[in-house]
Image (cartoon, rainbow, N blue to C red; front, side):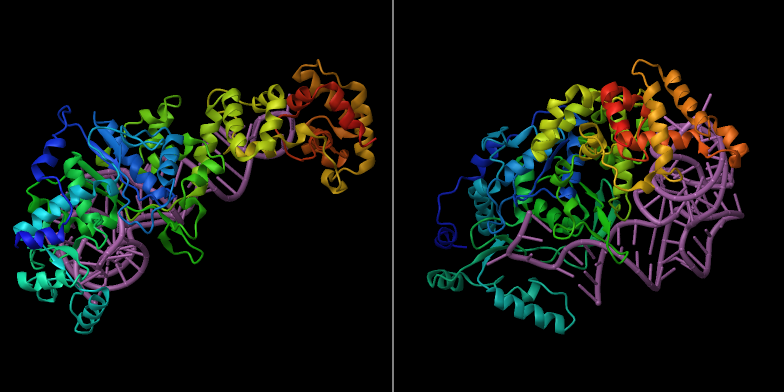
Length: 548
RNA sequence: GACCCUAUCAUCUAAUGGUUAGGAUAUGGCCCUCUCAAGGCCAGUAUAUGGGUUCAAAUCCCGUUAGGGUCACCA
């Protein structure tokens, strides 16, 4: 390749390889330290699968004295969205996942292996690409996409592997004269790697999660530099992860079949490849009972923001994902109910290597309830307020103006240990839970107190109003309900009622139900005694009188 | 079509050649002197399929089937 061609291919001033390598010295980290990363495309959206992957990578790095960094893979200019980096960082920050290096919310960067945004590294990729062209490891390709489509069709018709390789790589062996001619004619070009792989050779891969695999070697002359001068994922991956000192690449299984290509490229560069860990993809059951990838278009929960918007406790989301990574998480949590979730020692040797878990809201909600049950009323209050301020401002105002009452409500049957109430999964549930405290219920359907009839309810209310006293303790409170029950022909005792149901109109449970409906508008509620205490004598009597 | 990954209760999974195949979620039942939630107790439900190897297979090997992934100037 003549210098003239190289200059036409890469007209811009580029740093030398030596200069570049000098700027990226090997990291000084303790023995065994892991450097890993999250490398999202800035599309304005963080997919839950990406988040899952990033979380796994972060755990791997931070549990191994290492570094976790964020790299913005914005080489697809068409998909790039303004403000997308902030979206990613906020999503991570919401869960306390903090990259040690990389782009920051304010647009700056931290870390000394940057820039961490690929579009700002154009010269670096080009310098390496130029070096490859110089050495004959890459070449310019002038084929149009139409040429390539046509070629693929021909290949498919003949039952051949489609792709740009071997004798189908038309531009692979252009002479210098032909290249020069094309360049002088201003024909658009891209740079392709000259693969030295043979499809008939098997190469063995040692994946951290999948174990030992064997695949055919890569023979495709894949594109390394696109028409716009930016690199493709593959090329950027090897250049960046080499320079940035990545020791472990954690990524989804969809990359598994590119590993032979990546290893080949590392070899052509003369670089040590990182260790790879390919995890199974999160899946979802569709309407037809079939598994599929969680889809951005079809599933709102594909966006990690969904969980913040809907008020899922951060820890619950993390716990759910950790549970998918290590099934032993549940045992650990059981044994350590009060330890922060980030203290869970994720075991990489035990990361489940299955077909890919179905994202299960039922299970997530169960974890949510446990997480919320472990919190104090104050914590639930402030988390709920926090959420409401962002997503339900009206509700937030109510929470603030009734903070003492709300905390008291949240404290009903909340205790340390496993006996805590578990009816809240997420902050969004709190509003419904609190509804009857803010306003007296309006009972429109008299059938709610069946088997009682309205006259019974009136009588019960009248009798009970005479007895109710805010200062009663719980036993006294219940004794009074029993008293009203007896006086009105209801069994004061469940056992009596069960023994001779025909002797009574009903039981003390029915009496309590009448009171419960009058006070809360519902047939089910937390401990009625505590609810009445919180509402206070005046409000209780007012609500009871509404039926009289 | 080629290549690759995966296959245990409904779901997430444990059991790395010897277990009555374990747990969690979900479901059903019972108990808990007011409902619900929680909790306790109990129950049912699984090694895709066909061949091997072995004294012994969920586990190792091969085939079949099924699901997933990849085969872009997207990542």
